[in-house]
Length: 297
Ligand SMILES: NC(=O)c1ccc[n+]([C@@H]2O[C@H](COP(=O)([O-])OP(=O)(O)OC[C@H]3O[C@@H](n4cnc5c(N)ncnc54)[C@H](OP(=O)(O)O)[C@@H]3O)[C@@H](O)[C@H]2O)c1
Image 1 (cartoon, rainbow, N blue to C red):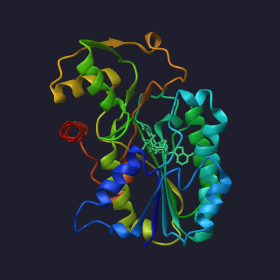
Image 2: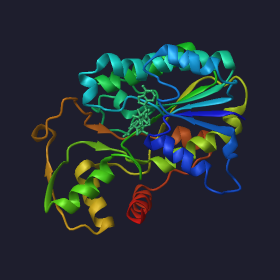
Image 3: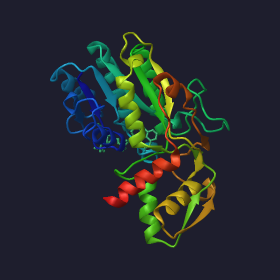
Image 4: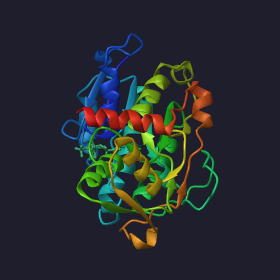
């Protein structure tokens, strides 16, 4: 197999790289993977995408981990976010189609408005409330239109990892610098440890459901088990990391941001777990694992 992974410097791209390159008899061989960042494959420019694929052999699988993920900045950089999250995805889908490659694309819980109190299932009505969510939804729709077969879209949420800036690394830093912190308590979501999602993506590639020909394109939801507010999440991080920092709950209104955030985006993972026989990892255990790795760096 020849597998292309975009977004090699991002949280998910690096997590996939780590698993693939960790000795484990069960893994797909590292030499089947090519990891690319924006230097090699710039998604902000369709000509660069075309050039990249014109100059490389066909791929069997393309995993698109790259995205414009700056949720607040996207409110001002609408066109740029739309190019990377929508038009580039459409182009990747049409190339994957031509190459008869499978495409795994990552999307977000922010395609929902967060007004439902039940965990979202894949067929629930989408209604993004910020530019980032709108561009990611446009990417999903373009992919489905161009590639009705052989692609999968995985919507994930509140991702954290050992890499880059994310809520866990930010809390670990701020918790050491300050005696107390105000954290929003009225947004509830499902945190996702990037290593767990990376493992799930690799399991899916090895699964017959995915590799069998002519599967209709599907959407799946993936996060760790457990729903939590940012406030509770911060408290859990400090408890695990043994950081003495008081956390004060505040409302979204008290912490205005350029992009609106959905209030409640728990996602239901039953479909992905059942289809690919995946065990969804417990949220606390995954957080402990990640913090241990960050501390050990
Ligand atoms: N993080 C979350 O909480 C979260 C939640 C829900 C869904 N998701 C989705 O999960 C996926 C992976 O997220 P992540 O947290 O791993 O993201 P990330 O850490 O922000 O990484 C995204 C990667 O995309 C690359 N990229 C951005 N613009 C590009 C361009 N024009 N051309 C090529 N590459 C470009 C970035 O490259 P540089 O390193 O060069 O900037 C970065 O390495 C994304 O689809 C995201 O929308 C994330």
